[in-house]
Image (tube, rainbow, N blue to C red; front, side, top):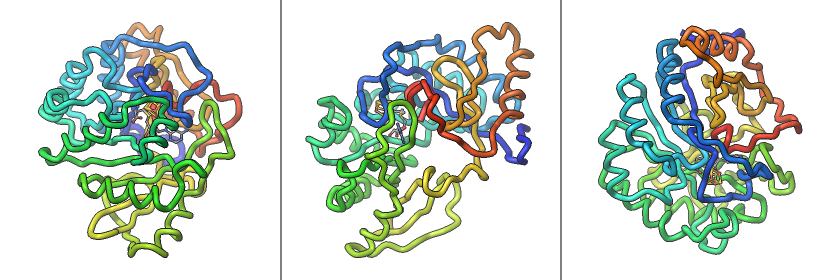
Length: 309
Ligand code: SAM
Ligand code: SF4
């Protein structure tokens, strides 16, 4: 079992399997232009060691994980390790065949990123023309019994308008997805003028629709949650209400480095590890050096695509 020096039990690993992406979201992609594609076998080798040390839950992210050749074979190998597996994707590269394959491999948790249902705003935020694919791909999930979450990063004066928010809530609920509004974090090329405290949405919503706070919902991650029309909506507030005290995770970046905190500029390189024993000692090192809280300092070079959101 992995426990850090602040008594936090670490059992969750986020893996950025690639920093490549077919989108260029304005809050995510940075000036960083070089991309890295470490062979998925190298991730697998490292994850096997993590699982022996007590990691039981994993989220595959990126960059765009579905851009990786061999991603389904990779998931099949992970499943042999008896891990609970989730995927975070922009959904643009999904189709019925790929989704069915992934679900049949035992992936039960999907986080889809969608920041607006407005085509123009979508194109502005993502710098792509994938609007129709993403919107239509939500329908693919309806035949499966899955935990589907829709994550929206709220950007001031871009998608923070209450009409946009209500449209997105309705869209999520029509597709049986739990919607979560996420605060913009200072990673990579950060524009502080776009920061929007998502708690403001709660008071605006209260004037328009009937929402009711709920507590004690297991497996939903940090944040505050509300009920609207019998469905859940969440507010993830890493900046205005940090949840570092209950952090249970480590990150494996697309460069094959361990990052013990998303918002702390410290990483341990695993690329030159020759044996599992070496990997193991680096994992312990990362856990021992996990900071109590993020700092989000300005020396950040990597963007979210590398670190894995
Ligand atoms: N490409 C996939 C996707 O978009 O879902 C997975 C990778 S993306 C980096 C993972 C999540 O990080 C997305 O939900 C995205 O909205 C979020 N994200 C990226 N940059 C962020 C930032 N600066 N602040 C908050 N969330 C961010
Ligand atoms: Fe790509 Fe996801 Fe980042 Fe958008 S948020 S640029 S889809 S990695």
